[in-house]
Image (cartoon, rainbow over all chains, first blue to last red; front, side, top):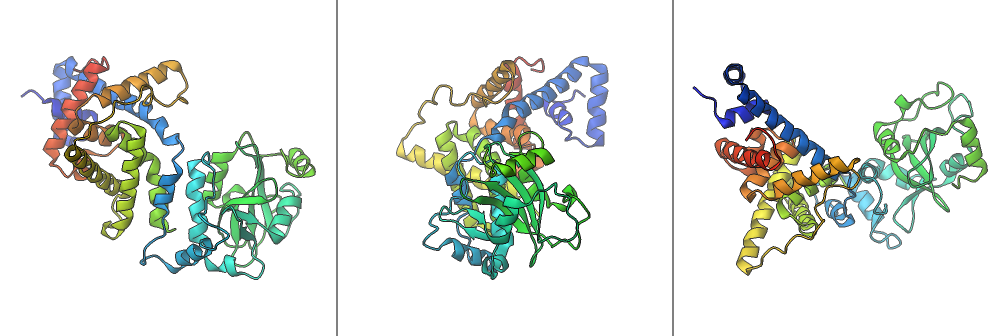
Amino acid sequence: MAVTEEMIMAYADGELDAAGRAEVEAAIAEDADIGRQVEAHRKLRASFAGAFGAMLDEPVPERLVTAARRAPGPSSPGVVVELAKFRAKPEAPAARPFPRWAPMGLLAATVVVGVMMGRAWLSAPAPPLALGANGQMAAQGALASALNDQLASSGATGVRPVVIGVSFKSSAGQYCRTFQLNQGAGLAGLACRQAQVWAVPLAMASPAQAQTTGYRTAASETPAPVLDAVQSLIVGAPLDAKAEAAAKAAGWRP
Amino acid sequence: MDEFQTEIVGLLPRLRRLARVLARDMANADDLVQAAVERALERRGQWAPGTRLDSWVFRIMKNAWIDETRSRTRKGRVFAAEAEGERIADQRIASMETRLEAAAVERALAALPEDQRLPIALVLIEGLSYKEAAEVLELPMGTVTSRLVRGRMALMAQLGGDGG
């Protein structure tokens, strides 16, 4: 019995069971043209992957992100309501944390701030983050000082209130640094230097480190979403000790 | 913001890509994505955790598209001819040759009848299995498979494949 075109296609797509596969393979053994058809199906699939893959990197229009982030319904957990109230303050209308060019990974990561921060950090006596008028999180207090002054490569040991992981230059030309705050519940995130402040596009709950093991926070101790954000922003390699000291001396201005 | 919404935000690039296969021009495609996202949020209680969220939102988008095309037909509106160059493949694709090939693939897909475009997109672009595609389309497997075959034969003929 001749195999059908449906079966040839399904074979190329890995959709057939063992009996079906055997049937098509027997047909291929008899008729090389069937083998060529299988190859043509696979080639078509590969060309689709190539043609449509790059579309995923296009920036998503703001209005779609806004639609997806609309205030959730009553079934949502309390922490979300808490942040929604915070956002609704008059000085922060229509939170718009990222410009249009922000990479998708970072946009998605912003959401992590909302989910993970919760009440503790927003109502702490000396919160490390503040919501600016532009709807963007910014570092303040001890965190801002550490971002300004502390070198990742300083080699200090022992538990420090703030540990700087890596410093690097972003695709937007800013200096960015990862941090771990060892106070309260612990907070890890990413800060990028803007004209006046360290903007914090990503922060998430991260248990305070019992002890630091040495020179810099090992990559394995940095939460995956923070590492992902670094990967999506970094240009070149992280700053070495010399470049980091130079950047600090220049006030982290590119 | 919660985990559900975070996942929807993460799906936006794929939703836009699929919407463009249906709607042909970018503004209409983004309107379709927005409609689908809004419906998904309204009906989030109907999504069964542990099942594929992408398939569920694709199905919502398919239905939003059917509603949209019906209302267009009622109002007697016709699609504007697509703007020249709007669907040219992404400019960041490295080589000119690759870019031309990608544009040819897009054009060939756009030329297919609508009932073949969506099954092809779900299987060849989104990587769904035939069964998953049938669930999104709310059609029997046999119907989906035969539309896939017809669409792919046409694509291979158009793109100079040697399988048709």
